[in-house]
Length: 285
Image (cartoon, rainbow, N blue to C red; front, side, top):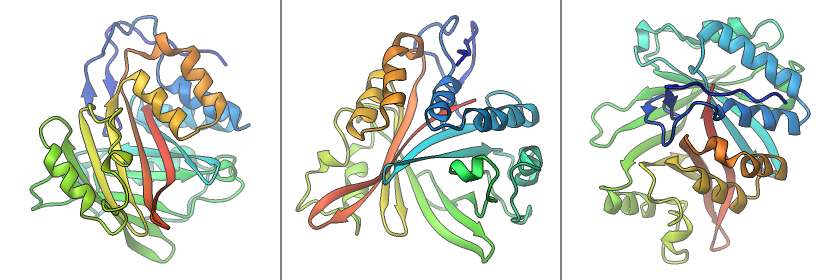
């Protein structure tokens, strides 16, 4: 795999596509797309993954696609997120992205462009990435007007229409610790009487910039935003992501330490214990 090198003064973005300052000079270091490519390579879909990267960059330009590498039940999949905060005056729309991916990747869905979404995402497993089966859902995200906490609502579009999928709430990790704890423990999927809060709000990651808590259909989720490279490594080890991914980050640590990363996991209670049912980590290309 050829490594893609960052340039001096390169702009960096988190998984909300918000810009953040580099922790070290970018010149000569690596772009996060290298991590995505390594996951494609390790899963045997390098060519299919590269075709997707090239198609999206050709349509949307560089640094406009957020990627997520997900692990659930021992299987790796990917999700790609597309933002346009102009909402109904958007340029990066669902039809534009689907057109860029066609004809190899098919999606029969067409959520209405009248919807005031600021972001949408597409899920890929190995078969969808290879174009063997069509995309069967699109996640669209809208704002949550009236909430005192920055938040958003996700709907899943399927052949049966739109259905509520989850809600996200953003907190400043440095100034809203009491609210974070209160939100995390006010949940049907977490029992603070049986599980220490530290098993959910990991102390090793809690000094990040933002913590996002999500309420989902049969689980909840927590995300730690803008963690550093060593915190990313801690996350990958603790959730036992594939060794190929972990080893690549370990080997390239000094080439990645100028960036910040976003990580998260879904959880629920199972027999009095906290069960992590999915983990994910994020970057931009």
